[in-house]
Amino acid sequence: MSVQPVRLGANQPPRFYRGGAAIAELRGVHCDGDYLPEDWVASTTTLFGSVEAGLSPLPNGRLLRDAVRSDPVLWLGAGHVAQFGADPALLVKLLDAGQRLPVHCHPSDFFAQRHLGCRFGKTEAWVVAGTSGPAPRVYLGFRSDVDAQAVRSWVSTQDRRTMLSALNGFPVKPGDAIFVPAGTPHAIGEGVFILELQQPTDLSVLLEWEGFTDPESGHLGLGYEVALECLDLSGWPADRLAYFARSSPLEGPVTRLLPEEAEQFFRAERLRADQPVEWEPSFAVLVVLDGGGVLRTGSDGGLRVRRGDTVLVPHGAGPARLEGDVVAVRCRPPAVGRN
Image (cartoon, rainbow, N blue to C red; front, side, top):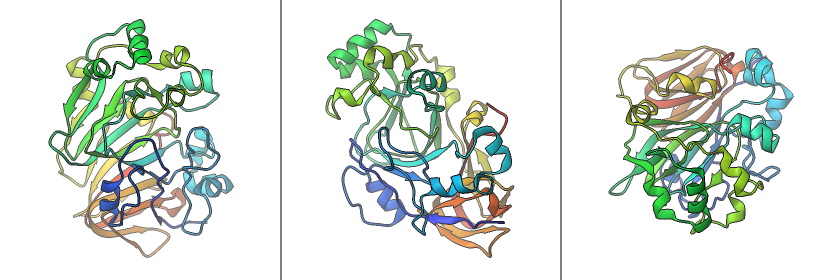
């Protein structure tokens, strides 16, 4: 049995920060609100504390989560199912920072399993799809080692200026890719539009909440004394920052965007299909950033794609080939056997 790739519509649950215009522009649609800054693509993940919010429907109205559970090998492949079960182990987002996001971090697998009963933490990566404004920046990791008590003081008093100045801040441009291990304090600056790959959870610890939301929304129901235990307090030297935040030229048909360490969490390649790009059967989320072309698989005659399309490619679609004057990012689950 085979299943064809499907083009997915926008899936934008309301969030606590502004954004969404860049998503609408990419997709070529009207922006419906100021607080729709995230588009959860091919999502089988719910918002923290929600039963269904965040889940992606297929074009026929059925939830992707339910379709995958009904035939996981068809959607994900036998090797993936043997390791991860009926879970893609991946969440892809389009994220448009209409304002600077708060300083925050995410739990590791170990922390999530111990304190939240959740298999996955939230390591993530950003592929910069666009920028606007005079100084688009991101913030990643502490500049030097910090003391846990000092951080608790910053959080309790909401010393936002000190928190932000303690982080490495640097400018970004389209094409940059940044790997963000769980526990790393970070923030995304206003005017930065990213394609985000992450583990399939909505687990965030907000060090900074003032001006965004209420403090009870920031500690995952654990209290800050426990929640802040997931924070990486170490300083990031320049060589580590350069290794995890990199820029790659738009050369060649396939460019691996993330360091090898990321493959145990997810994989991302930029495809430049002025020559046909082929790949083996795999569950994948294809985000078309520029141009247009045709996605061909062994199960159909071809699906026309263009800038702004997000396409879900099931493992059961067979080998795939992307043709045309098109630039896209292919997002895939963890490499089997890497965990």
